[in-house]
Image (cartoon, rainbow, N blue to C red):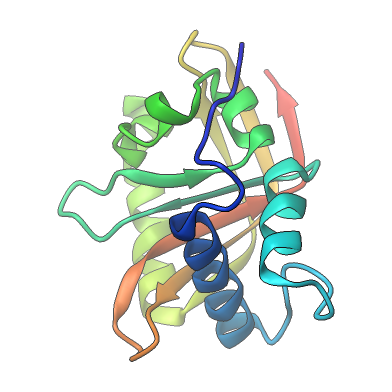
Length: 157
């Protein structure tokens, strides 16, 4: 499946990666990429990284607004499809309560480290994510700008 996305020089992509990095650093004290990377290098690196990275907006029913290649492959969606998907649909109906509890903890604490849970692809294939970091996104003024998740480990069920 082709994973189309905005071009690498797209201003949205550079700004969004800066938001992800700034918020991650604020919440965890760590950086998503080596500090010496330029914004375009970081955008390319994170998009192609062998880890899943996703974020959603602040809508009442949040929509994914970023996913890297690994995340799109896991969910079986291309850029246009995943950025139109309400993030709640990444979990099965029976797992919605646990997902909502996680996001509420993240909202209250700033981030949660070591999260594990089950997600589902568009094709109905289930997978367990392990040791995920989920964090709040904050704009340059500190206002809520969504939430993001990153995980390097998953297992197909």
